[in-house]
Structures are given as structure tokens and as C-alpha cells.
Length: 229
Image (cartoon, rainbow, N blue to C red; front, side):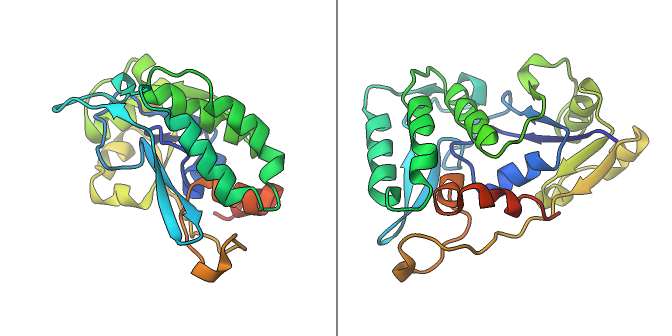
């Protein structure tokens, strides 16, 4: 059985994003669907001494339907400097900051035109940290048909997968009969946010932050959180 997971590119995603990829044989980046405003495609949360804060990548947003692959970064502000300063200020005392910081900074500070390019450069770097190596495809480069469930089925067929790993939210909108008629098995991701030792314990544990929170605090032990399924 060949399992595929399909997801929009996100900025420094949370652990559950990588948990799904870790249990897949193929990952498809869904980059030719509508960009979601106020989601986590251009921002994510980190922990601070007063709780959490967003790291937000400024973009040029046009009203109406805009594909993720077409979203341009607004590089007129020095957002990369600000993001890195925030990471250093809040995470430099953590046990594994130095293990990952040089490579992460080098990738973050490269020049990117589109949000998708930035997100995937960081995602692939983190996959390397996690020692996850699987083929990655982009939906915009695949020959597929249909919308909604038909599109998902078509993507599975395009990459030769006979099992689709879905997040639990897929139960609300997917046509499971369509998967069954095309002999594609649907499996549901079972992910529970782990509790681990975080910096700034005085503000309490905060789940579902960016993956950098887990990496900087737990280092290679992060892989253990990816095993449960």
C-alpha cells in the first residue's frame, strides 16, 4: 500500500503537519488552491515570556480568488530580521537552539519571491532535521481533474497512491464513496499534541505552536512524537 498525504504549504507548521508526512510514503503540496487569509499559510505561533505571539510573513494580497502558488511576499519590510530576532530572543536559552539555528537562519534569510517557495524551503529543511525523506510533489505540476473529493482522488491516482491519509476534518466534507469506487483506502490521522518541557514554564504549557518550539526544546527526541499513530 502506498500512502499519500496532501496539504497546503504552511509557514513553520506545527508538529501535527510533520506527523502526517512521517506516516506517508508521498507528500503532495496543495499549492493551486485558494489562499486562506488569517490562516497559518503565512504565519505561525511561537512561545514568549508572556504567552505566545504570531510570526507573520507580510504578503501582497489581492481580494478575490488567489492561488497559494501566486501569493507574493512583501519584502519591503525587514520581516526576516524581525522573525529571526524573535526566535533568538525567545529560544536562544533552550537546549537545542544551537543545534538547528545556523541552518534555519541560513534558509530563512535567502531571497524568496513567493510564499510557497519560502514555506517549502523551511519545510524541507525541517524534514531533514527530522530525518524524514519521502518524494514531494506539487499539485500545480500534476495532471488532475475535478474539485473537492474528486480532486483528491485524482491526485492520489496521479502519484500512484492507493491510500489517502487525511486529517480528521476530512470526515466533514469528503465523499468516502468516491474513494471506495476508485479502490483508494482512506485512513485518518490520529495525532494528539504531546506535552513536553518548554521554555518559560511560568506561563504554562502551550500546545500546537510552530515546530521550532518542539525542536529547540526537545531536539532529536522530537522524532518520538512522530511515531505514535
